[in-house]
Structures are given as C-alpha cells and as structure tokens.
Length: 47
Image (cartoon, rainbow, N blue to C red; front, side):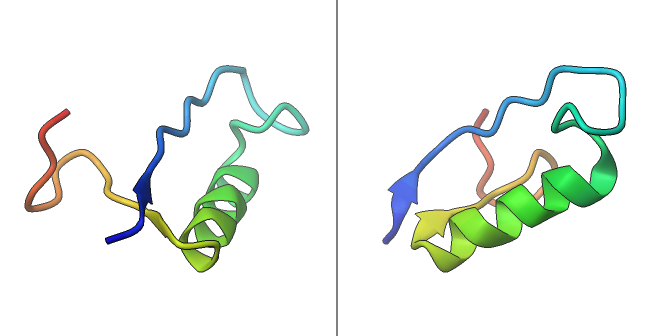
C-alpha cells in the first residue's frame, strides 16, 4: 500500500493549483510516485 496523502485545493482558477488540469496533473504525479490516491465518493473513502 502506498503512502496516504491529502491534496488540498484552494483558489479560484487558473495558475493557482485549483484549475482542473493542474489538479488532475498533481493527482497523476502523486499516484505515479506511489501515493494512494482516493477521491471522495469512491469505495473505501473514509474522509
């Protein structure tokens, strides 16, 4: 099992990390780095 991390998005859009392409890229790189990526609403998510 990979490390559990939290990705907190805060902002209002482009170039601040909360835009959809930036956020999804961050999740992809975390996953490739071995992190356990789980989103709210997915099976096994406990918040």
